[in-house]
Image 1: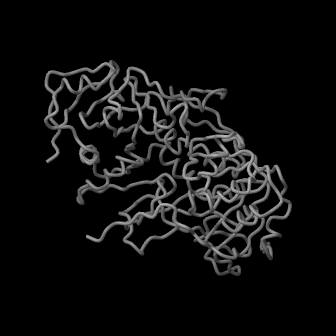
Image 2: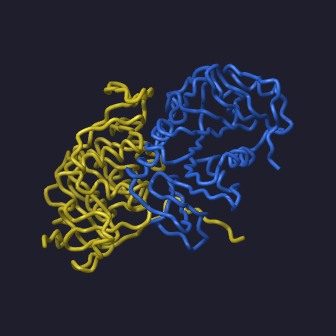
Image 3: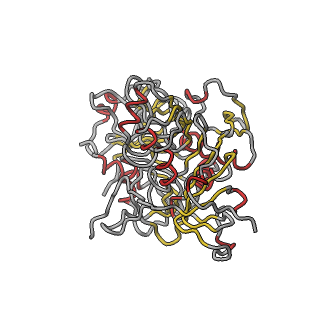
Length: 233
Length: 219
């Protein structure tokens, strides 16, 4: 068995440097690697290029990286709900690259799967297609999109074992399972780290081969961004 | 009288057929789920990665790991499944999702749609809208016929930055049901007690008016 466990979060982030490109799992505040984000926000490193579906909220999630001015370029699909991010975007302190959500997901998956580029119809005829190669297949037009090149993928999983096998929970799977193994180094924080043999191989979502480092997250707030309830009938 | 948002949602709910997998966008489209009759077998997809969404949870039963693409807390129904966001857009791009309902700022008579960016105003991003409109065969736009200032949202040509081209087939507004055909906007139905001249006045693009335009049946 190959062990992927590292004893603490500092070991998990070893090798990270200013200016690197980071993939961060999660959608909204759901399934974000909150322990890793906190440590990065308090680190001396900055000038990151971040790839993530969204930008968190002012005082939580990815928002902490903007609050501490750690981000130079943000590659994202939807960037609402964060006032400090908005301020930095409008004052051109950060560069923002908006990408259709399905394209963003596929650019992660392509990186994970060793596919350099792919054709997608998303964005054809819009400003997203400007400067990109267009090709026609079965009389429909597609644009060429390239896989991301990232240094670190920062992932949150629900359960994991020491071999790096992962199980996600609910919609927290989102970008986490497709960013795992999509960067040079993949670091995973889990809610429950268990010995090998405790997870049923039939139930594994992402095999440990995609994971470089795994550790037990210290605490999980798991904040809800948009609490919506039904009223009892 | 023109419809309110719930009326638009009610009319769109009639477009749902047995066995449909449906993606509902944020805003009016979300309301469509409220008007689905229990006999109908449909499943709602949300592009972050869930099929088989149920109603919002009761207070105290919410789960941080269970949200929709609007980041709202949700529940799941028996038969639901979770998947990653690439698989989710695979369902959309691969045309496994049968119907997409989304809102718009403008639609034009060629089927182009603009719903993500207003120049000079804060841009928040397109989310999954570009993937959805570029991929789905069956797209219904749910929107008010005119904007707050009374300007038509059914254009000859979209003036705002586009989300997609040649994609919208049907529009349901507070005034009418309109299909987009080669020659322009084809008036299919008018809202209860709405006169055709009101629809003409509120439509900037070419409006084709058949001899008989039936009134929407909203029971």
